[in-house]
Length: 135
Image 1 (cartoon, helix red, strand yellow):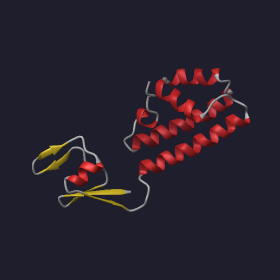
Image 2: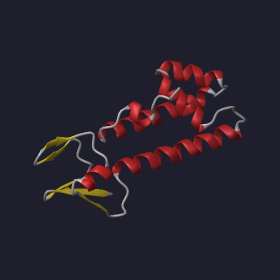
Image 3: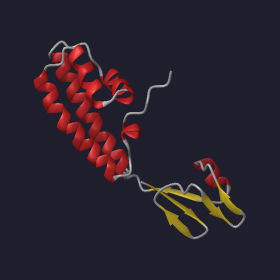
């Protein structure tokens, strides 16, 4: 996990805006933070967000393996793109159009809702988890 120290204060996240003697500086980047005299220390431990995404990606990898076993035409990247651009009911209809069995949809849906609740506790939204695909 990274820790950001500036003017004797340590932050768990990159402060944006950064309050300096000359005023607030934003948008902030790690490079700019260092240029302004800040120090960044990494203890090598994953952040809560990194742990969340590791768990989510492990789950999605399991789902992709199951989809392959069932000979479904669906991948993690396709799911993420669909999740980033569709409402829940549309996402379910999309999964059905991909021949995903209702038993699988019914098993996956509560698990995704659990991930959303966990993300919410970390201050993340659906859009942070599944960003809209860029055109």
